[in-house]
Structure formats: structure tokens, C-alpha cells
Length: 287
Image (cartoon, rainbow, N blue to C red; front, top):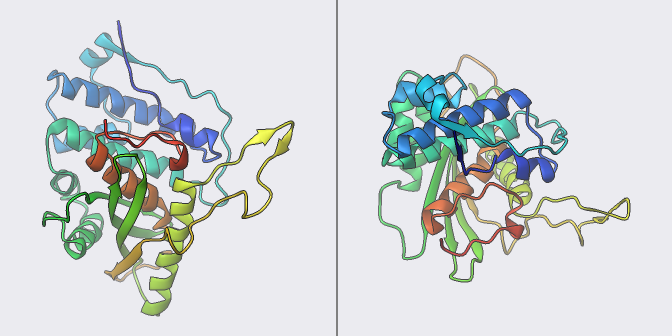
């Protein structure tokens, strides 16, 4: 039996204090297995098959007979404040991008096929992509990543534009985020909540880390625990697409698409899948 050389992405976030449910971890491993069989030409990627893989329902027996996935996630996991759903969603939406790449398909078109029977998911995906100009040429050295999810009662999507220098220095240049929280009473307030959510989400993705030395937490205040500051914060553009009929969240949902959109853009820029956060510890030099 051959071992697939893929490190469980859960490990890095767990080490950074961003835990995830065990059930989601094993669902992800099913998806990684499915992706590998596609890459090797041993399975056909279909929207239905990808959806089953992403939800842990892919049970291709022939694939399991040939491969085993190593799960080296042994770190205890804890809640990320009150944002527990965000970590599982982080992995799921990243894996969508991995499947799209394995299938040789455009990440947007791949997701559109998955969401053809899910109009609210599709609407925010399309809104973010259109606003960001997905498919249109970008300046030299700038790359895009896209993702979509649903959480806290709202449907959200984001496109990130980044650059990575030859030395591996990351710059997040632009974020376009779309949200459908059902109803929008105060559009300006919703826009500000979304902008703030990217300050929080990008801070965690780029810098968020608690380290222990001699039995004590080393980070004591914002001089030793970094967060996004003005010089690093990208422009955030919001697209509101309320469909009515329900009341969803507007502050926390878009936190879930901050890191995945950036990580997918980093892959477009470098060819590297970063599975451990924070990004300040990652080698982003082109693969």
C-alpha cells in the first residue's frame, strides 16, 4: 500500500490555536485521497464526485485499496474564540481549489459547476468574481485566488489579489467580498463589518500565533502579537447581494474566506500549497 505524501493541513492551524472538528479532519482526508486518484488518472472528476469528496461522502473502494493517507495531526485543538465553524470551512474551501487544479479547470468555473443547484452560494460567488474582474488580465506579478462558503447564517465569497516577491515577501493588494445575509437594513454598517472581518481574518492568517516558552505565553501585547496595520492592509471592496427571506450574520461570515482566498492566490503566484499558518513562518519563494 502506497502512502500519499500530503501533510494534513489541520496540523498547522491546530498548532496555531485554530482548531477543527475531528469529523471534518477525516472528511478532508477522504478528499485528499480523491484528489490524488484524479491526479494519477485513476478517477474521473465530476461535480457530483467532488461534492461528495468535499463533504466526506466519497468512498471509492478502489482508491482506498491502493493508497493510505498519513494523518499526523496529533496536536490538541481548541476553539478559535466563538468562530469554531471557520477552521473546518477553511480546509473545505481550500480543498475545492486543490480539486480544481487536479482537474485542470479554472477555479471559478469548477465552483460554478459544484454550485449549479445552490443558487445562493452561486450568487455570491458570481458577484465577487464579477466585481473583481475574474478572468481579466492583471498587472505583471499580481495573482488572484477565490473561495466561497456559508456560515453564521450568511452566504459569502471573496477574491484576493496578491503579489509575492522573488524573496518570498507577500503583499495582499486587494480583497473583493460578496455577502448575502438575507436582509440588509444598513448597507454602510454591513460594509464596515465586512472590512473589519478582513482585518481580523488576515491578522490570523498572516501573523496569528501563540508560542510558549518556559511554561509562559511569550506574546504579551500588540508589540509582540502582530495584527494587520495600515501599511499592510489591502483595499476591501464589498458587494451586497441580499436575497431576502432570512436574517444572517455580517461580521463573522467573511472571516472564513479571508485566509483561503489569500492562500489560493499564493498558490497561483508560487505553485505552493501552504498548509501551515501563520504565513509569517512560511517559505513563499516560488516552487
